[in-house]
Length: 212
Ligand code: GAR
Image (tube, rainbow, N blue to C red; front, side, top):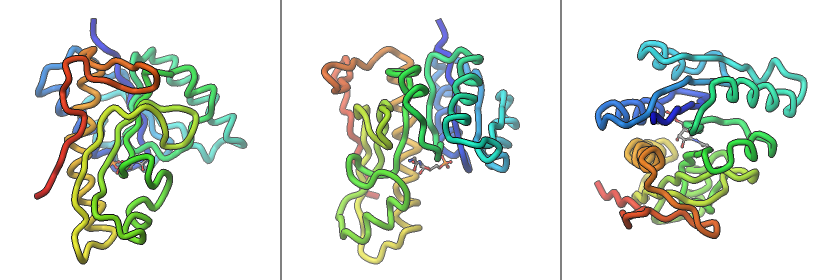
């Protein structure tokens, strides 16, 4: 049976594109049920439309409270009956009812080696700390921001002279490899969650190292 995938985005949608392209190239047993953005101007929406995906906008600014937005988002997502919801650059914190509803089938990508640097301005904070390695994490989502069982991580070097933009770009290239890998594993039933830890059933390495 096809896995019904729904993506939530807020911006340019380059991670979404990477996953859609991998799904196509590797002929995953999956179908896209939609792309929802909380920002009407998100560039990723146009990309999704151009590629024949169903899109929907749920502008968070149109809601009085966070809870009201969350409830509407939950309703819209449920209506599409997804098996998996991928947060591909979705920049809103999701409330507990939403997260609980999709527990175990809600994935997020964050541009740091979690649990370091959750939240905003990830790369700036990493550079301020003088870290020598940076990267990205794909994880199942729990109600805590940028937190939950880690599915896979990608590690990139921090180079002398890096500014926020240079580091973000290096990490983003790694994200485009990491997210399709993690989503593909989930779709293919390769992941098992035991005592809060995600294992790959056939023992594939859950860390990617980039040193270009
Ligand atoms: C990515 O770097 C993603 O990791 C980050 O937003 C960017 C979206 O880019 N997500 C978060 O910071 C979530 N906390 P994209 O729209 O080009 O995929």
